[in-house]
Image (cartoon, rainbow over all chains, first blue to last red; front, side, top):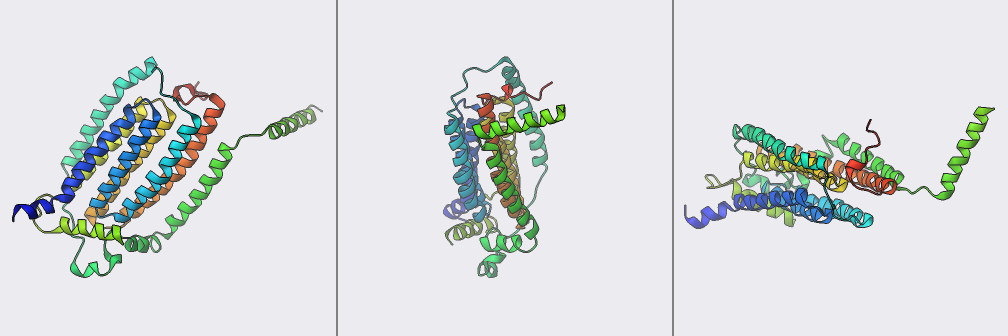
Length: 202
Length: 121
């Protein structure tokens, strides 16, 4: 096997390593920055890098959704709230935070060692996903829109419908939470409570 | 069609027998574990409630990576379906959580989680 084929066959693995390194560096950026807007930028980089990793793992649909929903919708929401509340960088960190700063890296290393031990003992060979016949029918290929849709609307229809109810609840809940109580509403509530107390007094 | 053909191209390069360097499941799980632990560390060391929220999103993404990796290596689409549902839950969580943050800021004028201790005895 000549070098060019060898390198071209290694491209997914090389991409995986590059994107993984980018994701880890950006993830550290999230937790070490003082200014939340820099943390948000770090999270966007992590999300985009993970979208690339999903592409190397035969999940093009999930990669597209990752960019559209996470980097597009959720991060815009985060940045919007940061801008709306006009948050400044943290000025000083209290003594308690200093103590936690010593505990967190220790816990981080313990968790990492624990997971590393489990992962090191694991060896699952990749199953062959493609054959020449399957390429003609996208619904049989892992990760295409067709195969995901087929699973979603047949065997997993109930969870799909449940998530739509969840989203409805989230819309109603967030509207209710973020609503500002107007002066008149506050006065009405106060009057109602006073009337109730008078009645209870009689 | 473009993302599909990209995915197929990646697959075909990865699947040729005796490929010198192909992605392994343990790499994906290790990356996922590292990202998850960074998220946990962030929740412990950060005090800004918005950044805590971002760390939760980071942890959800690490779990998503695990699901996609197992879906790839067991050749089963269920994992990718779960990722779809996790993303929906993350979107709902972000909407409700940011609404809570806004009302917290309105009542307390702070985003520091140490100062939001009304339920502490």
